[in-house]
Structures are given as C-alpha cells and as structure tokens.
Length: 367
Ligand code: SF4
Image (cartoon, rainbow, N blue to C red):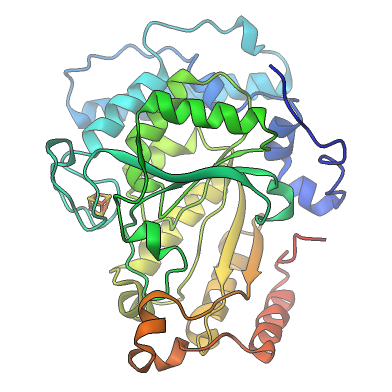
C-alpha cells in the first residue's frame, strides 16, 4: 500500500526516556512488531455464542492469557504473524460478541444505565446503538510522539462537563455521519495511508462506541498502533475488551475528588472508577495521561491527581495542560461557576509544573 511518511517523522523524538516509556508504541509504529489487534484476530477461541455473558467473559479471560503468551513470542521473534492462521472463531470474534451484549442493556460505562440501546433506547450519553463520526483527520496538535495522529471524533459522551471544549459533538449525538464497522475500518485505513502514526479513537468519548470500534477491527489489516483517548469511566468488563487491542492509552485524569467531578461533570464515583481504570491500563500498556489544570483547583484536583499518578502509574508520561478556557455552560453562566470562569494563571501553571517536578513525574514529553 502506498503510504506517505514524512522523512523526519521518526526523528522528531530522540528523547531516550520517552522512547523507553513508549517502547511498545514505537516498536509498532516503526514496524518492528505488529499491532496487538492483528494477533488477537489470530488467536483461536472455541465458544458457543448462546452461552451466558458470564461464561463468555470467563472464556475471554482465559483467551487473554493465551493471547499474551503468543504476543510475547511475537515480540521475542519466536512467533511470526504470517505463520498465525485466521481461525474460524477468534479472540476478536469473542470480544465482538461480548461488546454487543454490553451495549444492550448498556453497561459500557459506570453509569450502567441498563437501557436497551439496540432497541433504540438512549442512556445518559444520549446514544442508541448507532455510532456517528463527527470528523476524522490527521491531527497535528496532539503530543509530539503521536503526530500526525489519525484522529476519529465520535459524538456523545458519558460526562456532562460544564466547561466542555468539544460540546458541539459531545452534547449532540446527531452531530456526525452514521458509520458501520466497515465504514469505520475504511476511515482508519485511509488515515493510515495519509501518514497517520496511530489511529486515535476520541470524542466526545469513544467508550460508548466500543461495540462498533471493536467490530471494525475485523475489516482492517494495517499494522498501526491503536490509541484510546478516553475519560476512563468505562466499566471493568468494557476495559477488559480493550486491554489486548489498544497499543497506547491517552486518558484524561481531571479531578482529584468526587465532589468536583459531580459538580462540574455530573458524574458519580469519579475517583474510584477512573483511578482503577488508569492503574489497570497503565499496567498493561504504554500511556500518556492528560491533566487539564482548572483555575482554583490546584489543591483539590491537580495536586492529588499528580500525587496519585506518581504513586500508581510511574511509567506514564503526563501532559499537564494549560489551555483551559471557560466554554459551554461556564461561558454562558459564569456566575454559577465562579471558580472556573477564567483561564489558569501563569503562577498556577508554574505551581503545577513545580509540583510534578518534585514528584519526579515525566511531565514534559514535548521537547
Ligand atoms: S455508555 Fe454509559 S451513559 Fe451511555 S447508555 Fe451506556 S451506561 Fe449509559
């Protein structure tokens, strides 16, 4: 396949520490090893599609162990992708079956609405089972190791952030073009052909679209790192489906406590759920965590989040972002949210950076 690659594209990052922390991502991007999902498609699993969800989940966990052994062989060079046959029923097929069940009644995120999305019902995210893409293009504004990033923006979100910078797509599930799994695969293949270093699933939020995203992998054969850019509020079961197919995680860690999360994103049990998912994803893959500094939230959010990362996700790179601006509901009703009705000051950003430095966090991946 013809593929455009900027000649300097692989030379932008010569920082040893970054390369070490993102070693799997770089190995896939450079073609030294296949993307995980290509091996997932080649692991045979015999299952009865009429089995219960619990039984299938148990088989999934067993298949995950087998996948990991095979992938280790691929990394070491004792197993070659081309020698692995496409089985009649694969680990990917099992994931697709499980994802379809999780969408109806819906248990994809920890809101666990339980609505029948396949029958057209909608939960807190506003989505039925159809998936819409608002835009898909080569994003040059992501973290340096990721650009150009083949970014696919989905509509709808499980959070209700009053300051959402993408509110036009996160609050309007119809703001996009409906896609089938095949359409989605074609979009990813096009982005790769245009020079994407990764396929970046984002929104809104991608967790609610997991059933279609996972099925789209059936129609792809490109070896490109898959990237999950999420609020990390998915259920443990949904996270398990992703662990063996995602090559690099790009999660948001916003709040250091549940009170701020409930007031500003209308989401319960934030810290418990999001920290659990960060830890599991970190222990299973490469990760760049994004933390958006909110004005007046250094003590309650920024510092606790950075402290937690330093203690629990020591391999993760952290992007401490200073681009917050009052948007969406905060812009319209600033008096209701006086604490975040302005941008963070330089002093606040400096304090956040100093704190991260003291904790020994690798927080400035961009050289
Ligand atoms: S994805 Fe989350 S918010 Fe949306 S319907 Fe399912 S459980 Fe509810």
